[in-house]
Amino acid sequence: MSRYLVPFSVLEQTIQAGQCADSPELLYYYLNLTEEYAERLNITDAALLHQRVFNVLLDTVCDTNIAYHWRQTCLDKVYLPLSNLKRLIVTYQDARNYFKMEHSLRVLSYYFTSSFE
Picture 1 (cartoon, rainbow, N blue to C red):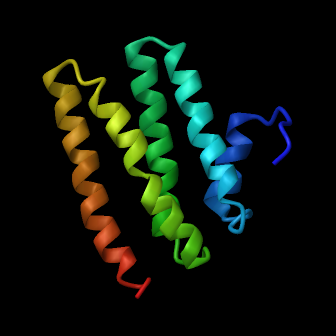
Picture 2: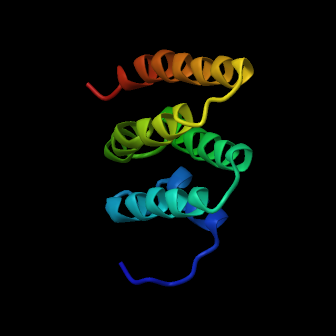
């Protein structure tokens, strides 16, 4: 993949739409870029960024109009922003939000991945 400067939101839209379903490198690039951005942010902003990425990937997994292999690839990687978020838990509310997201992932992935088989 060439290294053009692409706005972050364009990457998210491309991932969510499954437009590059045959190029998992795009997803890996997006996740690496996220981690690079998060390193430069304070804890609150980094947590918001990881939540945003988590939601993009989970929304993609739940979209049945997207190719199943792309949804599966996103499901395989949705744990990365979640684990990054876990390291940023500071308050009780942060922990509650984390566990809600983890629960949503378990429930929705179970429901939507039954169509993978």
